[in-house]
Image (cartoon, rainbow, N blue to C red; front, top):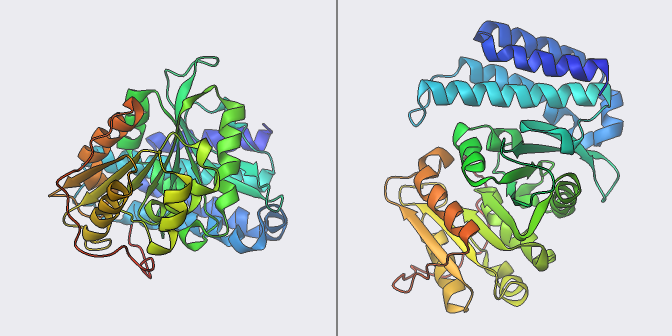
Amino acid sequence: MSLRGLAAGAAALALLGAGPGDAGATLQATAAAYYAQAPQIARVTGRDTTMDYYQRLFDDMDLLKAPLPDDYTPAMWQHFLTSITQLDLSLAHQLMDQSYQPMATIRGLGETLIRASKDGTMQPVAVYVPTTYVPGRAAPLVVFLHGHPQSETALIAPAFIDDLAERTGTIIVAPYGRGYYDFQGSESDVYDALAAAKQAFTIDPRKRYLAGYSMGGFSVYLVAPIHPNDWSAVMSIAGALLGSRSYMVTAMLPTTPFYILTGSLDDNIPTQYPTTTAVFLRNAGIPVTFYSDPKATHRLSTLRPIMEQAWSDMEAGIVRTPWSLTSAGPLLGVPPPTFKT
């Protein structure tokens, strides 16, 4: 990596001990430098998303001033702020420098860009590689799809995501959907991220999983049937199967295990829709396990207890068929107009 790339890493690491004011100043200075180079960056990333990465720096500045969320402890919130700021600064500097961190060199939390097979642009991918990973020793892989409006960095930044990866020895790769709603139009970017991970790391071919949260929890039903043999199982968190996608799922993934998670207090994606999805898959003869938390809302952090259970079951190949589960209606016709992650 070039000197500027190394400097970006040093700046991000310095934030670990920086106060909100110092971190905010670093973000602001980086945003100004990025804006000055935006025309050149647009030729690398494509015009549609160039300013998205610029806006992330301002969103991070706002987060630094935001009150502590009810479902976070101060330590958890500080970890999230540090992680997302580190990732977004790294992304901005790699784009300004046009020098990208090789995915294979990432340990712990990192961000890189990979070349899209669709159009040759460079597209962001957030990565977590557990400290226990040893090249040559096969590890599980989860390709994790983010919600909307959410970035791949915001999805992977919480401490409990790191903890899950460390506890299970799982590599997590989170591609950015280019801001496309429901990942429609960026499906190939997901498979590019999968291919890059398989090239960078020793991945267990029996343990390759597709997971998604919120919008991503809807998108797994769109993405997985495209190349069904690439996935050992599919996890949908606070998402649901649309009626228009049901045929492709049943036709292309008839024996693939699904893990469906919902919070009973979810007022964004009401629990009836994931429930109906689980019942539909069960009745179609597809292996499915259903998890519901009576205290959880739509926020991913509130779903942590059942997510840990589902993650563990998925990687162990355990299916707990919900025979007694009943649905409250048909599959959802269209995705919600907005997702509130």
